[in-house]
Amino acid sequence: MSVFESIVPTAAASQTDHTHPTTLQHDTDHTLLHHHQDPYQELKTRRREALAKIDNAKFGKFHIRACLVAGVGFFTDAYDLFAINLVTPMLGIIYFDNGILPSDLDLGIKVSASIGTFLGQVGFGYLADRLGRKRMYGIELMIIIVATVGQALSGAGRAISLPAALIVWRLFVGIGIGGDYPLSAIITSEFATTRRRGAMMAAVFAMQGFGYLTTGLVAVILLAAFKSSILADPTNLDYVWRMLIGFGCIPALVAVYFRLTIPETPRYVLDIENDVHRAERDVATVLKEGRDGNLVKEDQGGTKVIVSNPAIVKGSYSDFYRYFSQWKNFKVLFGTSMAWFSLDVAFYGIGLNNSFILSSISFSNVSGNAWATNWNAAIGQIIIVLLGSVPGYWVTVFTIERLGRIKIQLLGFFMSCVLFCILGFAYDKIRNTSVVLFIILFALTQFFQNFGPNATTFVIPGEVFPTRYRSTGHGIAAGSGKLGAIVAQVGFSQLKDRGGHNAFLPQLLQIFALFMLIGLVVTFLIPETKGKTLEELSNEEDEDSYYSREHHHHQGEHQDGSSLSSNSPHHQDPYHQGLHPLSLSHDNNNHVDQEK
Image: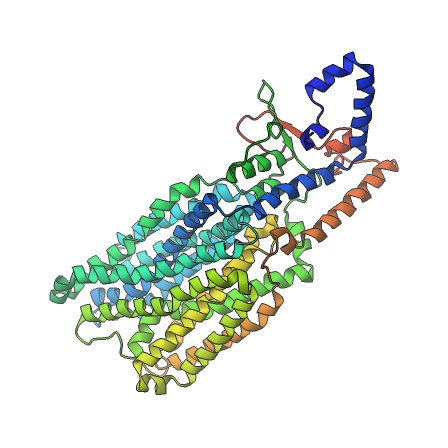
């Protein structure tokens, strides 16, 4: 007999009661026995069974699809973020007499996307917990598509200049990119198996490396196609930068349909929507299991029976404060946020300015030849990404379940700190000795950032928070990272020419080393997540015992004859009204808990 049948007597049983007194007595005793069982515990058991199916499932087509759908978004994110690194030198050549984009405009164009990303990460992170992962997924790509087309078609006018228009459009691109971080991380995390969760999330994030690489490849293709026209008139670079930017919306267009059709995660359905039946059905659908006919019952009038647990905790500002006011929970939020902040100071300080670093070692600049200068910048970016970024991402994917998240993050921060110290303190000596050596050391910093904190700071926040705050927590951590990126952009722009053109670069690299050290230290606040379920990592066992104590405390008061106000949880609790924790909804289209 299924759990559902044990809670809800079937119609057949009711008919038997009228005709067979002995059977009636037996069924009455059986029903009373179940009345003595705690229905909350029974629902908790069903919930854990549904989650166990997800956690222990075989890696299959649905998992691959989830990784690809999320990964294409991160490919687009990286492409749109880092393409501007190659575009801003072109804008200087095309629109300014000295061939250099003013530093304030360069800063504005680059930092606007980081500001938008911060807003998107925090905003979409909150909304995904409030409204649902599925409801928000896909909206962020639509924003990216519209804003990318807007960038590519921007022009100067009487009321607004071209750089100003780009700043506005890149703010909106950033909002879309920011929304992708918590949504893709949480959806991948909540669908993943425990054994492969880290690898799946790292693989999604690793698509950033291909997006970064593709910016250089597309730039090389476009520069080769327009070589003769650019050599004849450098302002023909206008075609190149617009097409380079516009290409970024193509992968987003491919992915948006699949994001809109991906199902809601069972954990959200269980813990937020509080619908056990729907979660069991969704798990069976995702894992291609045969469905038990008793799981979903529907009468001829269209009434759907929704099993829910009235004792389940709801997300709220007061509960958020209660949860994160405990040091064991707050230290995880602080550790993940500060580690991501420290990383992004260096990661974006370099990633959005490597054309300056390459030109400082005389790799990219060719005086009087706009085509060659941009060609070398694109080639240099390809070399650095191939030597450092792409290998770093994928080494993480293949080792994260063996080494664990924390070991990789500690190793990455330590090696990045050492390499930035070498580059910063021996900058002139290395540059004057060998450009190749400089590029190799520079690429190694990229490798250990990606085989290290750039991947793990994305993975860990998607694992360590409870379902009701998982997306919000990831958004806060990711938003903290973007604050680091903003600090890096403003600081880099204001300081790099202190004492002369690019004269302060060695000191900036030394500052980046300091932030790598800070990231190393705060990593010790974060727990290892390898091989643990999301519920174990979010201290849910403690949460369950807390709410269990609260439930039994109130139950005891009720039995002592204490009055219940209309605001009492038992006033709304069907179990304490002589009913079972079942909600009946007559909505044929939505499985929504009556309490919501």
